[in-house]
Length: 83
Ligand code: FES
Image (tube, rainbow, N blue to C red; front, side, top):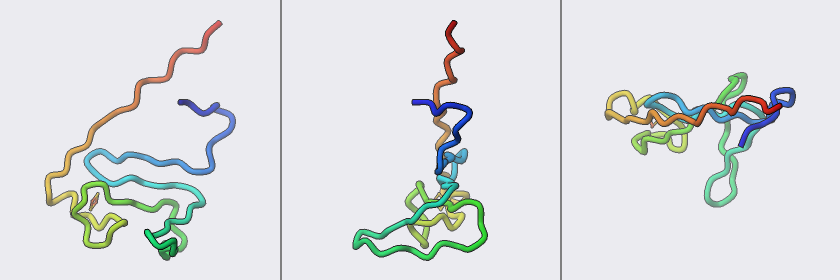
């Protein structure tokens, strides 16, 4: 699913190569009880662990660099405009 180029989504999630998910935009991150995590102020993105090895879950603490986590999936390229 592709968003129109003129209207950027409020939140963007970037998959970092062999690393975390970077969440950009106005978000709240809640625990399983519905309580909000305190997010770092003044940062443009929040890095969420997807390797499962962080000691600060759900946030990335950089451990993915030591544990050999690999993730290089790519999205399909956008289709050319029709017409
Ligand atoms: S993705 Fe960075 S510690 Fe898991």
